[in-house]
Length: 336
Image (cartoon, rainbow, N blue to C red; front, side, top):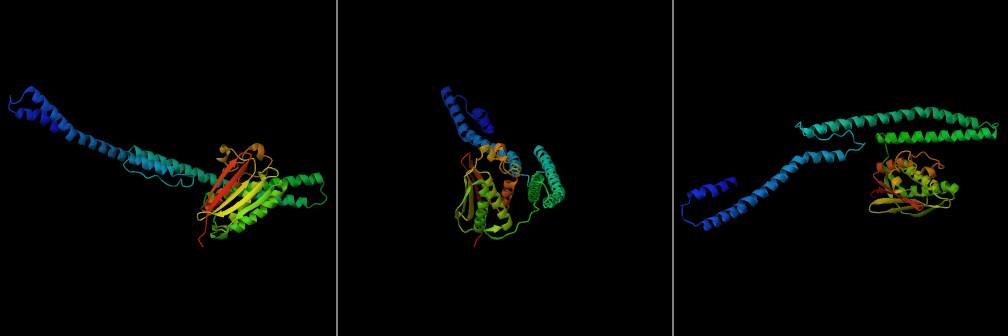
């Protein structure tokens, strides 16, 4: 464009014979040449500049976008993954190296926490087993005064609660480290749901809660029967304990879009939106004013989420305070 402009306004006027055109004609010719230059050179040059600028910007930001996407995929379960480096030793490559070093340190910290939890749980099991046995032996003494027997029963309950906490922590830690093996066999989920509803009747009787099996369609899934039964018992127990006197618990199992959809609802105090975001955290027990009188260790829903996730399913909890809390689980249905 610069060369054409120089030719039009410098070279070409020198080549014209002098006195061949009036000043008005020369002015019109100059304006026409300017318009011609803008049309044939300026517009394409501007378009080329914009396209080139966009391409260069995308090329410059591509490493940043790749780094961002890789960082977004990192969780506590895949901290061993490393972000890709460009290898050109620029600022972004250096940033990637620093980020990989940070995730490696985080991975080592998580590993140390898992090892500490496993070792602590293992060390606690032996004294708890000894205490449990000694308390049961002491309770077999028929000469114990009633007050002493009542204290021993209370101590036995606390030991059993501690044992439950230790077992739950051990399971979650091993599951987080990928050390828990699940069976992969055909399981009739409808049979397990019927059994869980029957167990819920027994669990709900002390709380005067009614249990209803509204629907139970035949569903076949692939999974571990023991873990799926554990999941159902935890949910049935929670639905009974965290309920109002005279409330109800409903079970619904239906087939939906090649998946088994299980819904368990209860008429308990419910949870606010803020508390719902934390229900799967270990040791979280909701509103302390309502949960202090309810037995439990706060690990149940964490175990439930792990079981559902390990079976390739999803779990959702919806709650209306003082109305109804609903747990919805979807598991892939096994092809017949």
